[in-house]
Structure formats: structure tokens, C-alpha cells
Length: 466
Image (cartoon, rainbow, N blue to C red):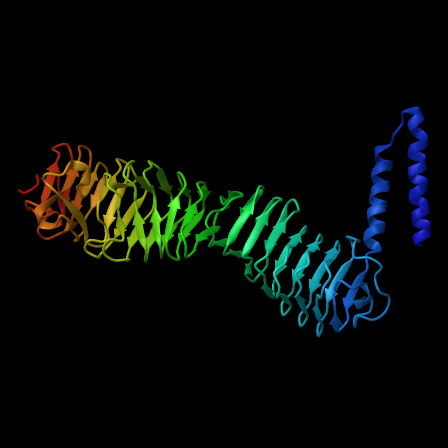
């Protein structure tokens, strides 16, 4: 059968070649020839199974029978072949390098130990099935030219792992942790990928799953725009947060995480550990379309000595991290948190002094509803205005029964500000009215514009302090 098919393919090619002198070529015939060629290749792909033990780079340790016996392969290079580390088999590399062009699978109960320092090259797809084990016990260079899927156990060494293919994927049901990863061909992470040391390369990594990164900086082009994907900077040493568009961005771990430029977060921003330095003697503007969630760490608007720091927030703001957890550490004017959502946004920050050296703005088309009391830090009267804590409203502020007061900064020796601009709306359900929502005190400078709207229970457009 093989001989007949090969002779037929040869016949078709000869017909094409014979017609070239007449400038005649039949596309249908050409496509049929190619289809027959590939059909032949895949129809004759062979599956090989491992013996119980041995070095996987040795051809005689594989066979066509499911117990590893039978005819052994003559090469690892055939891309259509499949090599399976079978159940009950434990293969260990010794002193040889290994290049395999075929696909490699590790079955349930199979174990592959890459135990030597020689380079391994996997040009076909690699799949670790449920119950399968991939274990790298020695540091070596490992190259992947195909897809990598982990549904079992994947343990990588500290050597450089490089993805060379185009349009390849890293994924599976279980986490893939590779300390040193280089992207030299367009690669997509579709599962959970953890890179603890270095993410290098000149190509593009696209994230549609979760990427946990612990190194200093992400070097390849990062495409993190796919809805719902998450990038987590979780290192324990200083990190640079790549300037790009994110879906969900998490800052965790410890040490500083400094923005390299403007950031856009189309989903949620979460801070649980470390110090996020939004600007460092710079004037970046960061946009968070979703929610701001802070359970730990410090959000530092600016750690330098120059620049204007602004964060635009379209969702809810929640801070449960404690006093001083959102601040402007540098000797610069206060950071600006600008509420610019199109729906009702809530602010939950119950700890006194949680926000220090911050100004809060509510845009003309936005509504901010308090879900807790919150405080503004103060500045000395000898200080200039940019250092005062401030709540500045051009849209709508709904205090409910909550209030804003002072805490932190210069304490009772300084002042903070509340401004309600023309066209803005103040809503309160506090029994003491506006005075219950915003204290009448020397430490709180207030401006109530006559062109603003005031709602107190059933009363609308009443005059403040009447």
C-alpha cells in the first residue's frame, strides 16, 4: 500500500512537471498532491512506548508495543510520531543530550527525569497527562518548539527554558513553574504560568490565563489585554511593572514594584503586599477601569522629588490595609485619585489615616457613595495647598450616614479641605445634616458653591448650615 501511494504521488508530480513547458498548471491537482502527501505522512505516524527503565534519548528504550517491546524507532526526528512514557515507566537521562522532533507524552503513572546537564530540545508538542511526572533534577538548557501542556506534575530546573515556535501555547489544568523563561517565538500562556527569576526574549508573550512573575522586569512584549486574564507581580525583590494595558493587575509579595510608565487596567487592580510606586519623580497617569482592592501593602503615588501623580478610577475603591497604606512618600504634591466612573462608585476605607497625602476628586458625570467613614490628612497653614488632604466634588457625593474627618498629616495643627463645586450634588442622611457629614472645625476648610445641589432627606436645594 505504501509503495502504491508513493508511486501515485510521484506520478502526480511528474504530470505537473511535464506540463510546465506548456505553461499549464492545474491548482486542483497540486493541492490534491499535497493533501495525499500529508495524508500519507500522518497515516504512517507511529506511536512508540517506553520500556520500564532506561535513558529516553536511547532509541532502543522505545518500542511499538504498549509495554515498550517490539520494533524500536530509527529516529526521533519524525514530526508525526508520538513517544509515550507509559504507566509504570521511569526514564532518566544520563550523559546524553536529546533532540526529539516527534510529540512527547507522559501518561498517568509515567515519570520522566531529566537528570543531566546536556541540552534537551523538544521540537514537537509536550504533554504531561494527569498522573504523569516531568522532573528536571539537573540544571540544563531546554528548548521547546511546540506546545507545552501540564495536567500532571511539572518541575523545572533553574536553567534557561526557551520557547522557539510560532503561535505556541503554554497551558494545562495545573501550574507550570519555570524560573528562567525566554520567549523567542510568539507564545501564549493559556493556563497558570509562574516565572520566579527571569522572563527574557525578543518576541511576544500573550497572556490569557494567569502569569505570576517574580523577576525584576518582563523583557518580551507583553500582550495582557485579553478579558479576564491576570498578571501578578509577586516578587520578593524590587520589580518594574511593565508599561502596557492589563486586564487584571495584582501587586503582591514584598519590596517595591515601580511603574515604568502609564498603566491601563481594564479590569481590577489588587494590592496585597509590597509597595506599589505609581510614580518615581515622574508624572504618569494610571487608569483603572474596574475596581481598586487593597488588603495589604502600600500604594505610593510618588516616591521621588518631582512629578504629578494621578490615578483615574472607574470602579469601586476598597482599602482595608490600615493606616498609611495609600500615600505620597516623596517630597512632591499629593497624589490625585480621580473618580471618573459612569455608574455609582463606592468608597470603603474605614481605618483612620489609611490615606495620607492624597487628594480625592469626583468628576462632573460621576457619583461617589461612601460605604464607610474616611479621613483626610492635614497640612500646616504654612504649607502650600498641594499638601492638603482634599475631597473635591464636581459630580455627586453621597455621604449616607457616614462622614469625612481629619487624621494623619499635621494632625490638629493643620488643615484639610472639602470643596463642592457649581453643578455638584451633596447627599446626606446624617441626622446632623451636612455638619454631621463634614465637621465644622478649624481643621476642615469647606467651600459650598451656591450653584451646587444639596439633598438632606426629603429636603432638596437647602442652604448649608441652615
